[in-house]
Length: 390
Image (cartoon, rainbow, N blue to C red):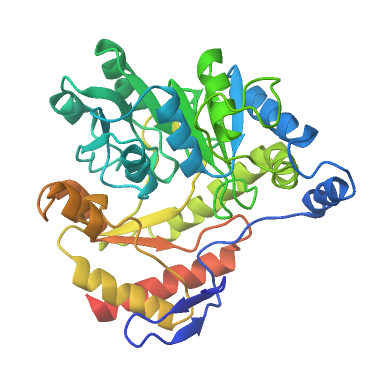
């Protein structure tokens, strides 16, 4: 397993120690103390910290119910199941995302129907959604890519018009808003992920949000081996899964969420440094917030200008890594992942906007603790490499 802060050289497979890592969690003594409190208690799982974390998330977002799970992937899967998505159904989603947005649809037995993206927001293009809706469409699963909720109000109106459920993949967007409305409040069900590179972390974990009590109750049962409310430990009402989040993870999440305003301000500061330092670089497309959006940035991803392509991008990634700065390509197109392409017959050219963007992305180091000096090193190194590689 590759260790944090280390990367493999793309040209020679040699492991390189990163002087500036792509991401790192921001853990304080408060988180450690709260976890130790749980470790000293008799409740490591299915105890009071889980409910406390769920209550904190509902209070923050203003939603009725929260269901803690062991990953964002599990949250998406259970949300789809609870909405009745299954064999013979279709779910409209995006090809520019982490693959779980697609695989969770497949896991239900339904078919993902992909729709190309908006070239600016990088989210699913609302203007293309209606053409993909058919008689078997059960839901829309849009993703707030990199923490950007642009277009989600329009997506909601489209889904309402066609009487479709929305499973809002907010796994990258905790703390972002659109016209003052928080990410995670646009969906019939909305899902957050708490992996260590996210805005807040529980180590591993996720959360389902909804205002529908029936949906929430079903997700509670599904995450807990299909047990019913108040039922016997060995009584199971339906097929279920062990997707529970432990009290240890929840304790970490409680403190992390209490720091969300501080975390958001810090991430916005780092994003601002990048925007300022790269403002005069015409070989790059530097991300900016859309009108009405206030992002709690998940990652900071620049693109090479459209006149460049994947070969030049990959050379830049390799050279940045060789110089000890960890970078990545966010995201490879889902439809060109080998097993997805084979299963559904997708080919290069099917979603040209997503493919073009994907071939030019460079995810730069981004986390709460990144300093202004480190940001300057990243930008200076990137500009020097652009001079040699382009």
